[in-house]
Image 1 (cartoon, rainbow, N blue to C red):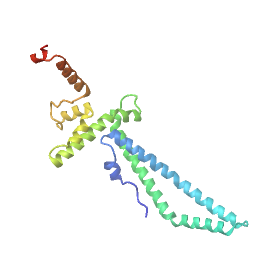
Image 2 (cartoon, rainbow, N blue to C red; image 1 turned 90 degrees about the vertical axis):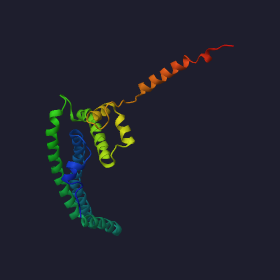
Image 3 (cartoon, one colour; image 1 turned 135 degrees about the vertical axis):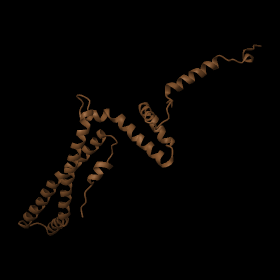
Image 4 (cartoon, rainbow, N blue to C red; image 1 turned 45 degrees about the horizontal axis):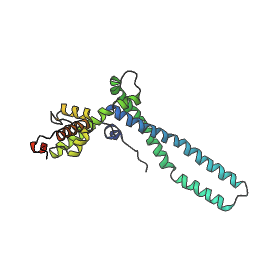
Length: 209
């Protein structure tokens, strides 16, 4: 028995995307896949008709028995799941309608935030930073709820993006005053250490024989 790939609930709440733009991108990808699958209904019909025509033709010519038997077996096999296949294509058409409805709803949310002149692809790229921040923020929040504190690995992930760290501090998921240790900070510390080594302060080190 055929079953739909995803329900409206899954498309609305369970697909990848913590922000409307990212969810729109995901649903558009699903829609492309479902529309490609819809085309296969016509392809399947044409292939089945072609086999029937080929079989009828072979009956009118001196064809080898094993050729006829093999072709007849292919036809019987294909017809054994025609009803199930028909049901699957009906479900696919229903999913296309669901996706088109949800995408229309998302556009109503996304359009007010579109940067002037930006295409959908450009907006997906511009939204990547916010998508990362919201996703990491939710993961931190879930760990705090479950364990009382976030894991070091998830905090390290949040610290990979300075803008994400600042936004998480602003909503209280990371303590205020947290300073991100960056490459330039380490280089400056190393430089200061080298300067101290070049200028020894111990008077015994300045003694000469």
